[in-house]
Amino acid sequence: MSHEYIPEIATDREGNKHEVQGWQDDFYGGKLGFWLFMFTEVMMFGAMFLVLTYYNTLHHEDFLLASSHLNRWLGGTNTVILLVSALTMGLSLLKMRAGDIKGSKLMIWATILLALIFLTIKGVEWTEEYERGVFLLHGELLASSSMPFGEKLFYGMYFTMTGIHGVHIIIGIGLMVWLIKRINAGLVTPEHHILHWNIALYWDIVHLIWVFVFPYFYMIGAGDVVAGGHHG
Amino acid sequence: MDKIQYERERKLYYKVLFGLLFMTALTFIQPHIYVAGTFVSQMVIAVIKAWMILMFYMHLKGDKLIGAMGAFSLALVLVFFIIVIAVDVTNFQFGAESYITSAPHAN
Image 1: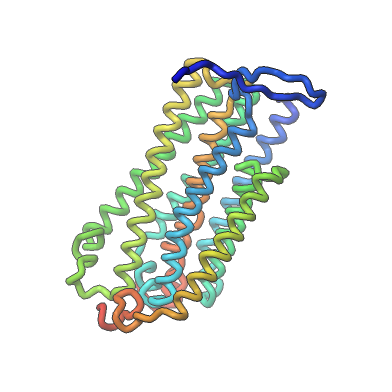
Image 2: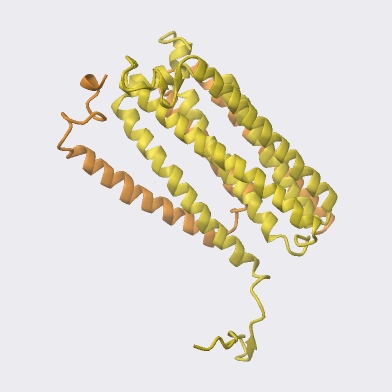
């Protein structure tokens, strides 16, 4: 079996044939491919939100009660941190496109720092929950505990979804460190910045998912706390 | 990218940031204004925030192809997931035995 190189031929509007040298400059193709990947992310989290909604309709009161016990201030702080990090990542891309490579790298480092603060706060929050006996395969979430089943479902989904979201944050930090290495190596430049564009898109989708995770888990029970229905 | 375009895009990023911060503040204020309908209100605020992120931070404004792909995917989810699941839930045969659907004996 031979491995002879067979060139790919593209034809222009005038009918002239050209040998394709590479697809590296196909900016829109690169962007489109990444959007297809992001749709798979949306499908994954979308399916989890549908499960959550289904459980919520079945055990609405339990969901409100469980939600009222989450720490809204830590969750809210993380919301603002992610929001600002989306700005810094966007500005890093803008500075790259404008040719300010140093400023661009500075903004990526700022985004990494904010991502680390987000993870630290999440860690504090999970530790708090563990200490009050609410954690996966632990204390109140064990099958033998007396916690209402709807609350167990709520917390199960809460730890699963915020955990998977946290993994995405860690992957994002890794991608940003890799991006800085590629910029330093001169492989990402103001003329060839598709990698930077796509990593910024990735960070936005991580932010976008949190935009729904935060109110769904932390805020739906807030109304009951205000009205004195429950205490949290 | 020229200086004018850079400044225009930079200003837009900050405008969207303030819009998102305002909507986040609204998330916290809403339960103090009215309790009934908290869930729906919170989801409406989230959808508005998501739209702002998609259009301006993710540069979907004016990108018809990817926008159409997104709308198509959303329609697929609505049709194949929500309707199919709704039919399935309505005709669920094991409600009495299931731990998920039947809360009382599962406690």
